[in-house]
Amino acid sequence: PLVSMKEMLEKGRKQGYAVGQFNLNNLEYAQAILQAAEEEKSPVILGVSEGAARYIGGFNVVVSMVKSLMEAYGTTVPVAIHLDHGSSFEKCAEAIHAGFTSVMIDASHDPLEENIATTSKVVELAHIHGVSVEAELGTVGGQEDDVIADGVIYADPKECLELVEKTGIDCLAPALGSVHGPYKGEPNLGFAEMEEISKTIELPLVLHGGTGIPTKDIQRAISYGTSKINVNTENQIAQAEVVRQVLNDKPDLYDPRKYLGPGTEAIKETVKGKMREFGSSQQA
Ligand code: G3H
Ligand code: ZN
Image 1 (cartoon, rainbow, N blue to C red):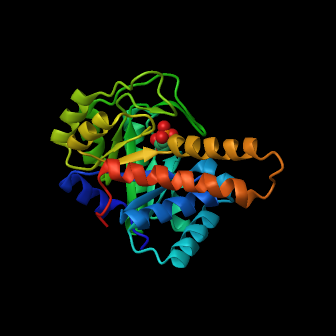
Image 2: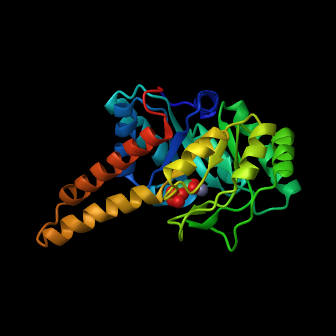
């Protein structure tokens, strides 16, 4: 069923696992991720950035596509459709009214007071609709669609507590050195801050930039209350590698089903591996 993230993440934090947010880039991602979740018996979050939604045809198309696939597949695991890095109250409202079950308001680039004001407004509307809300503090490095960071700023634990208490959000993404896209060298996550935040804040924590984080760091993050991990680039790389290979091997091939199909399988296998690594398999 289509649900908000609230229950699945609270359960994850209590029981010590993380639910993956896997981003949708097009139809094939929705197919691969929903199939992976069902086969792994795992709850799942379908992340949709504003850029991806534009590419797919808008929020309404995303919701219709996901609902139709879930019906066709007879999906039994909990699924959330989540706006990733929502840029404004208006965009979040648009997603909520289109049927998204969860939104992220990313006002992390604004001063704390403004972040709190915008996030509160989103929470007020979202909760009327039973929609969960994620907010962010600090900056995730790298670039994702329209979200470009010039430097990585670590979230301040005291500001995190203030944001949580003043807004009523359902989960918090404290940026602590993670990066969108591949890491240059080993990631250097702020585990001291993460531990401190997890001691004062009972909410599920979110880790952005899940691509390329070693398993030991994933496990440590989960032990410090991380119960949502976002992955996009790793699926894109897996898909692109296979499609490139097939097209290189068969220069006469033109039927998209024959080169995209194997790419979709690669996404599915990557997602299933993440679900096992995060511990969400067999938890639905
Ligand atoms: O919001 C989406 C993610 O943080 C994805 O990060 O592309 O590095 O896996 P990634
Ligand atoms: Zn992100």
